[in-house]
Amino acid sequence: MSRIWIYAAFASIVMASVLLTACRQSELERGETIFRENCAVCHGENGEGQPDWHIPLPSGVLPAPPLNGDGHTWHHGDGTLYRTVDIGGSIFESPDVPKFRSGMPPFGKKLTPEEIVVVINYVKSLWGDKMSRGLVISEAQTLVSEEDPFPEAGR
Image (cartoon, rainbow, N blue to C red; front, side, top):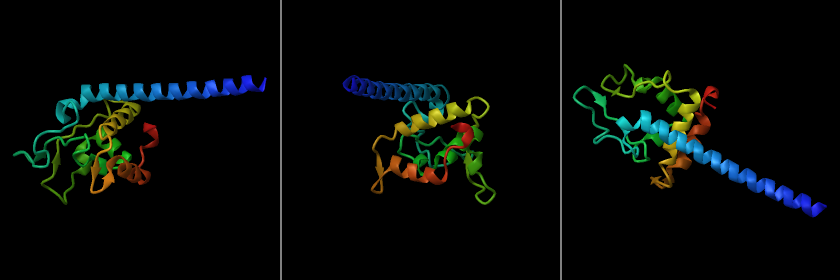
C-alpha cells in the first residue's frame, strides 16, 4: 500500500512539473505574440532595436532601443518596465533634461496588466545568459526588481 502511495506521489510531482513547464512555455508564446503585434514594429522582430538607438533623431526623439539585452532595458526593475509599457516613455522625460524625448507610446489602454507582465517576461527571455561588466544581466535585473517589483495589478 505504501509503495502505491509513493508511486502516486511521484507521478503527481512529475505531472505538476510538466504542467508548470507547459504553462511557462505557453506564457512565453503568448508574450511573443503580444510582442510581435505591438512592439516589434519599433523594437524589431528579435528585439534588436533601431540603428543608432542612443542618438536622438533631428526631432529630438530617441529611436527604439534594443530589448534583447544589448541595450539598457535590463538596468530597470520590473516596476519601471511595467510603467514604461503602461504609460509610455514620457515617464523618463523631465524639465531637468529638456533634450530627452522618448518615442515610446503608452500601451495601458490596449494591453491588460497581465499582458504587460507577459510581454515583459518574454522580453527578458530574449536576454538568455548575456553578460555585461561581468554580470549575467538577467540576474542583475532580478536584483533591481527586488526594490522595484511589478505593481500588484500586474501580477
